[in-house]
Length: 265
Image (cartoon, rainbow, N blue to C red):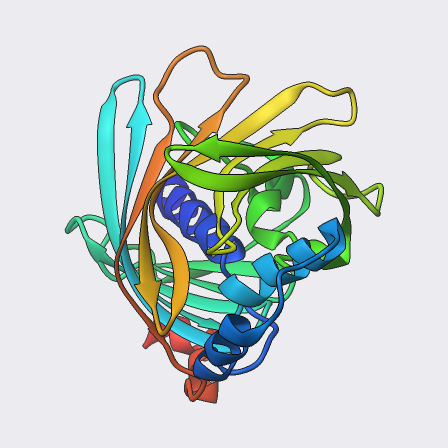
């Protein structure tokens, strides 16, 4: 049971990490983004990507399906996310997962299982592990989501991807302790959303891929609606897919939600 909770937490965490916030209020940023000039450098493009997907608070309901070797498993959950580091997740379905919760505060992560009435801190070597059937690691969800903080960028070309004009960006880590030393992004040149991403080890080996299969517009921002993650080192399985059912920007989330006490409520 615990492993399943962790797996769900992982998938949600990575999703949130991909869209977490540190910028101004959603509406204000959207209006500002529309009026801003076209970026002239790779660094400016990277900041526009961060500005588009980051906010001070959001509430999302999502379904995630792990396409494992023995079949698919789908989990539904609701997540409240605050600034660039905190989130609270409650699992809604299936019945055996319902009531399980996950709390992330900065670089710490706890899970709660109603079956055992136990709260567990996920730490140490577990953070570096892949989880059964999953295509992600715990490091993915704990990584600073602000790309401009962690990577330097260079434009390697202009291409067309699924009919959309994109920049191809090459990202190089500024720090040695990041999970991915290099990243290659394909970024929509009009919407500033990443449509495809490859993540690499320091050796140059491809580790993981992300493909956005549907997008949506919320408060003037273009965001991922559906996506699939794949561990490139796995020889079986078809990745982990995530679909956002609803998403609301909200900068007035209750402080009490982001505490260990909320896990047992």
